[in-house]
Image (tube, rainbow, N blue to C red):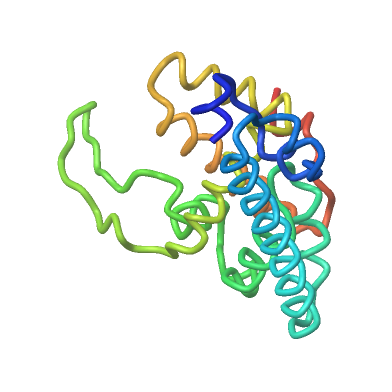
Length: 193
């Protein structure tokens, strides 16, 4: 609505802070003011509902130490950490980090011989919820972590955005494997060199 009627865009984080007076000053038409006030009220209500849901979910789940360690990774918040913790279960069931990344659908499943494609494994094998969680974490990490942003831009320059996001998701999955296995906090220097 702002882009259509005012000719510029605003980030959602600033829209969440709008007051009624600010909305009235932004638009000339009373219809636009009414619509904008309705949108702001809806955003505030939905944010309140989301916080209540997250609070209720946290009370129902027994949090492990790995949950607190996952929260140290940039791009992983409460919901993604809960998803990863619950979907992984015991991290010791994965023999190596490669097995874990494969389970998270962060690596390709094709067979190569001498640089030629000789077949493709089961692409749908693994956990789709972990695949989603790490892609979401990659999106958030590119916003808030400078090391992740540099890696993403480097990969995007060579390929495209989807490949760059998946590469960053793979890096985050590898990091989370070691974080959950060793119960240590995230260290950006080790991941983004």
